[in-house]
Length: 279
Image (tube, rainbow, N blue to C red):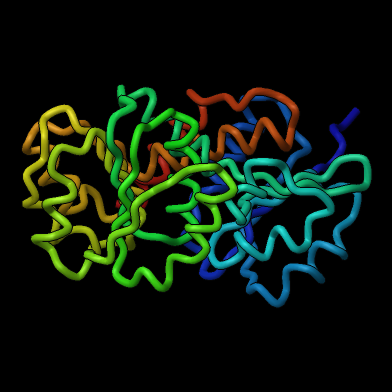
């Protein structure tokens, strides 16, 4: 008897580069879910509602990447507490004829920071977009004492301020990213740094006075190592690449969509192989 067909996919734009299919297919194989399929689908914000409304009962869930993380909350039937607090989601799960939005980016950031020994002292977040909002939630979960957020324009940090208010957090926002010396001074002595900036944007901070033992998570994973990761590592900081964040958020997605623990070892092997094939 053949396994029932179940479908899932990652939506976003651009999407051709996504490594999510390699991760999810590896999970299905390891879990023995032979009737499961996971696709990439190019999608803009205007198309999400119609796409979701037309899905059949074979669909288990969707992964959503940029620029769809905020619009996801508008199309979901219900929104879990973490996604509601952040104001964005990256996972839509279908069950019992209804959909629920989740945000596994929080796990994707919190789990590797915890594994790297991140403490509860002062943290610095670079950027104020959707990933920075998830980082703020992850640091709140870890019990970080104080968070400084470095941005270019404080006037564009409204969504992050909203996340902070819903979490009951009080980050200090500094419009200093265009001023490298000022930004570097705020990095000095940080216990944890999370960079959510695009590839290359954080590299001018590579020469900051990094403290040995600081944990740096750089959400970028290609090209790797980034300039900021290389500079921090040379000073003795512990580095977490965006690939680890990608892996951990996908492990959490698999569990939400299948109801079974994500097979981390198999997924890590598949991710390493996919990255090697592209290099």
